[in-house]
Image (tube, rainbow, N blue to C red; front, side, top):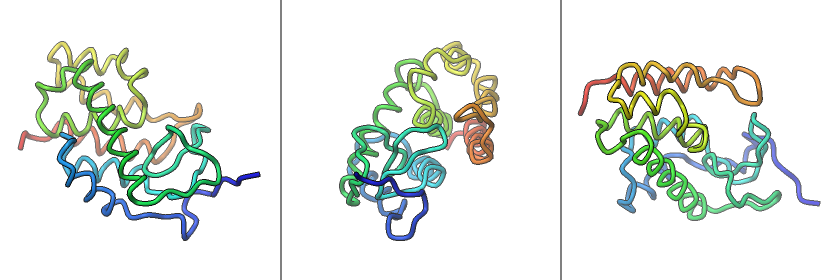
Length: 173
C-alpha cells in the first residue's frame, strides 16, 4: 500500500521560488510574483502527497487535484498543477468578484484566498458580494473571517489572512 508523507519531511520538499519562476515565465497568470510568493509560502511545496489540516490529500503547492498517495512529483509537474490551480482561482475572482476591476494587490489577495478556500466557498461569500458591489475596503476587511480549517482556527490561516488583508488594502501599484 502506498504511503502518505508527513508535511515537511526532508527530501520531499521543493523550492517555492523555483516553481514561481516557472509559472511567471509562462506569462499566463495575472497574479504577480509577490502574490504567488504569498500563496507559495503559505502553502509550502511538497513533492510527496500529504494530508492537509482540512483532511484532504495534497501535493505540490496546495494541489488537491489528481493527487495519488505514494506518487512523488517533479518540479515541472508541480509547476503545471500550480499554474492550472492559480488560473482557476483567477477565473473565479474575475467571474464572481469583479476581478478585472481590482488593482494588483486586491487581485493577488483575493486570488490567494480563493486558491485556499475554493471557488465554491468564495463565490457565495459576503466578501465577493462586497467586491461586486464596489465596497472594496469592506471586502478587504472580510479576510480575517476565513481562518478555520477542519473545524478549528488555524494559526497559519490567521497569519495568511492578515497578509492578504494588508495586500488588499495596500495602495495600487
